[in-house]
Length: 299
Image (tube, rainbow, N blue to C red; front, top):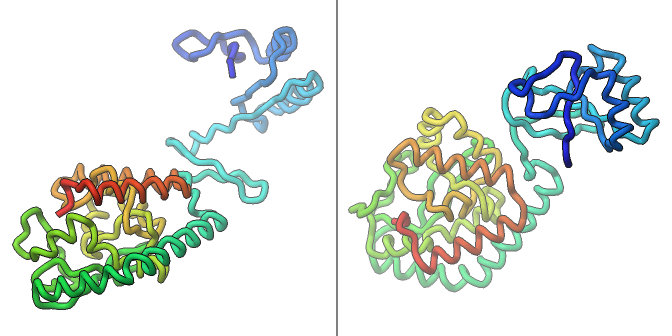
C-alpha cells in the first residue's frame, strides 16, 4: 500500500503529519478520481461531520473504497486488539488466540494426546526406575506435591519427583538455589535434566496444566510477585505448563532480581498473545534439546 498524501480543512505542515498535504477535504474525491486512487481512509468522525457519509457514497460510485478509521485513542491510549461480537467491534488490551472455543478444544486435544503418549511410553517404565533410585538415595516419599497457582489464579496440587532431602511443606516460600544443601545427589541430577517435572504430565491429563504454558509458582510467590509486577497476573489467563516460552529462552530457576521477573512475565505474556499449535511444538522440541545439552539455570 502506498499513501499519496492527506487532505484536511486546516492546512498541515511537515511538522504536523508524515504525509504530503494535498488540499481541503472537499478536494479529495476529485484528486482520487484523477489519480486512480483505490482507497480513501477517513480519520474524522462521520457523526460530527455527516457530509462524510455523502462523500463516502459518492466515492463508491466511482469504485473507490471509502474506509473510516475510528480514533480509539480517545479512550484507549495504548496498543489494542480489535475483535467482533456478532457485528459489534470490541477492543481489548491484547490478542488472546487461546480464548476462542475452537482453540481451547484444539489445545486440550493436543495436551491429552501428548500427555497420554508420554505416560504410556515413557513414564510407564521410567517412573518405577526413578522411584527405586530416589528411595535408595534418601529417605522420604518418591513424589512431592505442592499447591501452585493455576489458570485464573485457582490453586492445584502440582506433582513432582522429590529432589530435596527433606520434604518441605506446601506453604514454604524458599526457592531452590544453586548449590542448595537440601538437594540430594539424585535430586540434583533430576533437576538438571528436568526429569523431576515428568509427573506433571498427570496434571496435564487431569486438566490442571497444559504441556506448554507459563510455569506455575508457589501460591505465596504468586502473591509476592503480583505485588512487584502489575502484569504478573496476566500470565494466569491460561493454564500453566510443564515447559514454556520463558524457560526455553533461559528464564528459569531462582528469581533474585526484579528484572528477572519482568523478563519472565514478558515472555509468558508474549506466548499467550502469539499461541498456536506450531509454537507449542517448537517449544517442546527446544525443551528436549535443552534437556540433552543442559541448561546453566537448571539446578
